[in-house]
Length: 253
Image 1 (cartoon, rainbow, N blue to C red):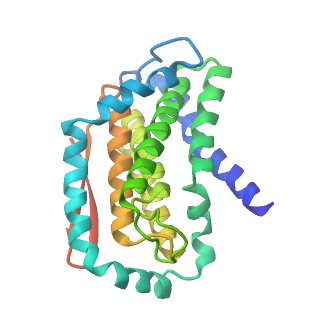
Image 2 (image 1 turned 45 degrees about the vertical axis):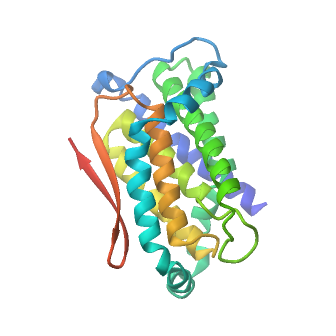
């Protein structure tokens, strides 16, 4: 029961930025695009082309540096698990991240934004919801395929679907869509939420550091694939290894 309530709360939190920002359309009309079709099923019709567009040099520019960083940090994965178990306490502090980054919350939130936008006849919110729905579909398709190929054992040995983190990928995909639509004022908090989800997955002993780095990269890549051409905001993201872990950098242009 508590988990269900928490999930609904997370969905409402995800829908909130769309409701707020939809009221600000007049202030930044150039940053948004109208849905390509008036059909309710339009986002799903875009899925085949989204999968094709994901295979691009832009995707490679995001995933290649992340893969190099993940390989470089692989030697510290076990230490990262131990550190997370000892320092990311109490575990209850990260419960919201483990729920909010989940498939139900992320996908449910995306559909909530889209349905509300359609029901209220808000082209701005419907466009945001459409992009969020497409981003979650593309994210899950690519993440689950990668998990099946890599077959990496989770830190808690519960299964062999550790790499990449689906929770982190879904959250970063959402953050990328929000940033592309509304700029850095919404993007930075959204990416911070993604970092919180990454810490949550490590505290729960479900992922290694390299898993969450690749999850973040895949989320950024899928979100970027969906939102190409939808925004005038330029906000580049980089992933890199550091001496004590990993770093995500943001550059506003």
